[in-house]
Image (cartoon, rainbow, N blue to C red; front, side):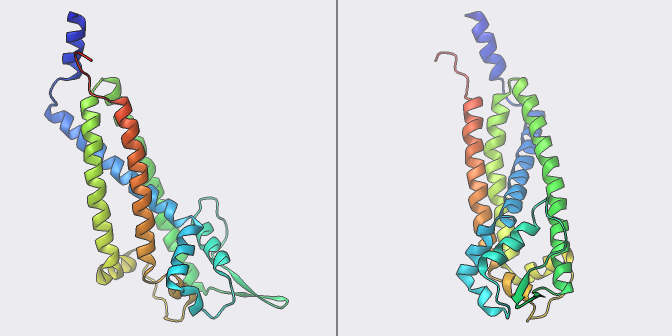
Length: 234
């Protein structure tokens, strides 16, 4: 009985200042890891672009005879890590293959993919940091810290998603972000601009929101199962 009481007190001792700092660090790393992964996953699945094309009818505004499925697959495939070569699609014109995208459009996509891959590297860092911090607290029996951390990560996730939505839905902020990260101007008749201009950001945000909530919910279930509150008499 005395042993059980000692164990209960050890597992349920109040959180100290350092515990709160660790909880905040873990929650921030978890929320950023989820958002970056969701963004990367959204950009490399065909469904994102098919949904956008069906909603906006953007492909009807281009001068090339290339079907939606081919365009969706080409864009999504370019953002996958194993993708090789330059970004390009072709229109069949008898025995000839006419390129769909100009050099400046290819340069835009190359810069976008490079930035996405930098984000992947950052995401790996967030995931590793989260895993090591979580493992350390779990081995120490600090289930209270882990419960608090995951609840806080949900709040951080919603705040970060709200900030992302504000930036992408406000035209001046979206333009500033594009200029800072890409910096290559496209003409109004450029195929890439017609395909991926507004409201593509709305489709992107819908997919990111859904994936983020799904990942967080699964994680919440696992975290709850591993770190149920210890009770003296149960």
